[in-house]
Amino acid sequence: MADAVKKASNNEKIKSLEEELSKTKYNKRTQHHIGLVKAKIAILKEKEIRKVAGKGKTEGYSVRKTGDGTAIMVGFPSVGKSTLLNAITNANSPTAAYAFTTLTCIPGLLEYKHAKIQVLDVPGIIGGAAAGTGRGKEVLAVAQTADLVLFIVDVFHPEHLETIKREVYDTNIRVNQKKPDVKIVKKERGGIDIGATVRLTKLDKKTIEDIMREFKLNNASIVIRDDIDADQLIDAIEGGKKYIPAIAVLNKIDMVSREDLEKAKKKVKADICISADKKTNTEELKELIFNRMNFMRVYCKEAGKKADTDVPLIMQRGSTLKDFCDKLHRDFVSKFRFARIWGKSAKFPGQDIRRLDHEILDEDVVEIHLD
Image 1 (spheres, rainbow, N blue to C red):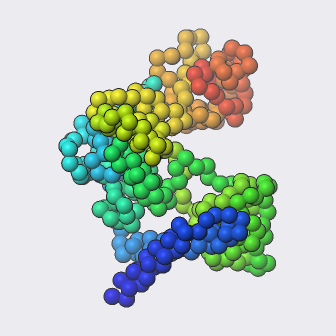
Image 2: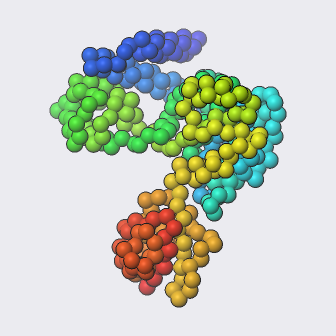
Image 3: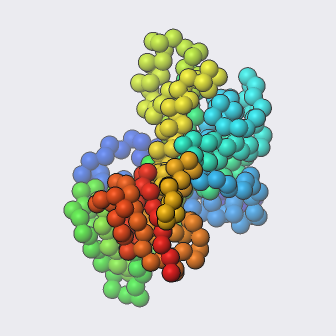
């Protein structure tokens, strides 16, 4: 009984603080107050998460990762996720014109530009999913293992996008954000030392210090290398956040007039508008998924032979020769002598590269020479 009262008390505090935030206009004068309120909310939410975790392990949807990457489709029930899965992959997910058709996590394989991308169709979520409503906690736990989130939004309910974004945010996933470059080291004494290599325009020194004190970091050194805001500072203090790309997809565009579609577009900033049922713009969606997953194609070549341009190796943009060798064989890095490269990363065709940290580019042809 005491636990229930305490839980209600924490939730009431969170609701009260969130209402206070919504009524407070952000400016230089309110910056400090807003930062502290956000810190209090984060601490209360973390307490609730720990309380739930302490009551026993929550069983999630277990899916073995395969292929070059994993994308998860997140949306309200009956937004057309199963139909979309069938349209872009080899899956055969059951579909119906009523909510909660999908009761388990159904994987499908999207093959595009030789990349093998696992796409997961999970049960629809609703408001409060991150707190456990409608088994939402288990569903959203799957997103922790994904490399890309597809927000699927019904053209009739564009307002749902902000709700599902908030639920994903509350499960410690940060979409379309770069992890802030912040380093915090606790000290025995001496108070809080703040060092910044950039000009901070969103936080002042007092706000940083007081947010840290809310988290009991009374003695610590913090070095900030990005112009962060209060949310990013709180994320850096708490840790455990996952940063992945996301695509907002507006579905069922074949079911509304051009005028109503334009109204929906104004309400939601979708990356792409599709009809999963009619397969309208699904090829464009595949291209968008490939690009947002940061993929590139690298071709292998054996000495004295033509390059194998039929089956490229799928790599992440920004990969080096070391990453390339690691993907081919675990012993290739230790035996590496040099590589010959044809393509955009080479100064001339067939350039000898002897540095493993050389960055390779899309459609490079690489010939590895070993000891």
